[in-house]
Image 1 (cartoon, rainbow, N blue to C red):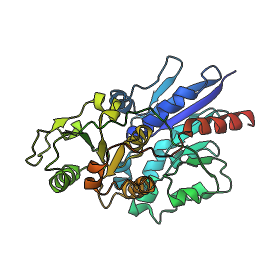
Image 2 (image 1 turned 45 degrees about the horizontal axis):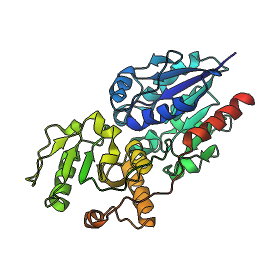
Image 3 (image 1 turned 45 degrees about the vertical axis):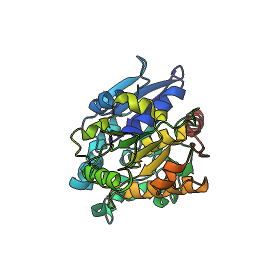
Length: 331
């Protein structure tokens, strides 16, 4: 008899579905009965950018009100926690894997939590909220898996184990393409990106003679007077990132991982109030610095003739599978 696995996927951004795809690529559907709980509209949206490895054996349950970053700014903790009461209906023998939702374990004692940060810790109004004390309860037996990007309060959890990034190192050409991609991403922190991009281009790229490609989400971007016209990205550009020399934008884990896979320099631009982006930007910058590349200095980047190989582990899916096997084999 197959073991049931319920995957609860946050629909907030591309990185969550990128992880999901890597998991689906490695999970044994002969052994596990998999159901995905997420927002179906988000699946349709991100499917255009990354072909999700769905099959008829995998069931999808629509949970349209799963919270995203903005919800944590406007809703109370009790209202957010109440969204997850559907967990009570899960088979008690099923294994729950939650992508970035600790709230799931308000309703279940055991399972696997994938998290580099918690939204309720990033939003100031939750700082003194006692509603999340269950996370550190000795009665809870869930394990928390995070990566090199995990914040200190995640690492301090007794249940924490570090795993590799979700992805695969790809062979990419070291040839220069004279193309730069600006990515905005989705979420609550993207409102200032048209201005941030405009300022960056004016400061660093007015004499750049290559092609500048802007995230299609910024279709009406008022770019400064450049030597060449700006073009807008398509889903094809995200599937062919190795056609770019640099990617510039919000350092969300999904796009950053894509760049690290392909040895592409990522230049982080972010809102000062965006805690996740500030944290990720420091880690990325330090990574490249170790290899002799200063991603804070565009002049340095433009003079550099080749891509730099970043030494980082992409064992996340295999590490997760080992945890799944251990938990299902040992009850």
